[in-house]
Amino acid sequence: MSDRLPDYFTFASRATYVAGVVQALLRDYEGMQGRDGAYFCVSHQGTPIAGGLVGDVPKLDKREKYDRLSREKCRRLFEFRDLGHRLSRQSMNESEEKYAGAVSGNENEYGFSGYLPDVDEIAGAMLAVGCGDMSRKDARKLLRDNRYMSIVEFYFRDPESD
Image (cartoon, rainbow, N blue to C red; front, side, top):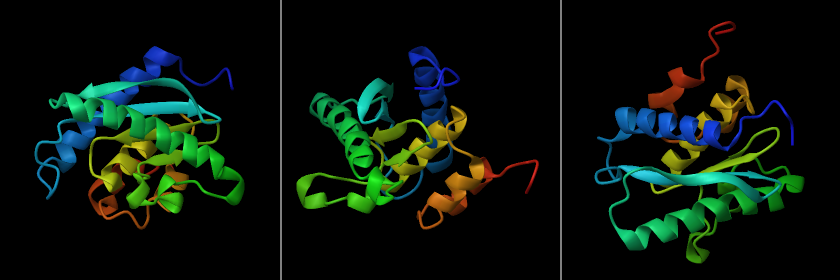
């Protein structure tokens, strides 16, 4: 793993910031009511290196599930990386509880679980960009088909080239 990437506490701080941005921008959209938090996972080659709860997930049974799913998304994304997968949606299978919500950066995988799958995916990309592990341009390309991209597109603009 690169020495230039953040440590655990920096990942957690940036994930908390991302959760705040997600809440500010997307909380009023259909399906987001009551989704005031999520679990995040940052993994390196599929092995978690940081993760935890950001925001509030009041139902205890959902906490374990979202934590498990955030890690599963990252692990699965790494397993399919050799096939060119950069988004966990490329290998999702909802009947097996394999959802969208993780993105692959240059060094690590970034996943969220607890929001809607498209929102989890946006949050993962925001975290990867915020950690310097993905360019804004790459994030825009990856998220171009995400149904919420038009709402958060400004976050992924590169002020120097856009």
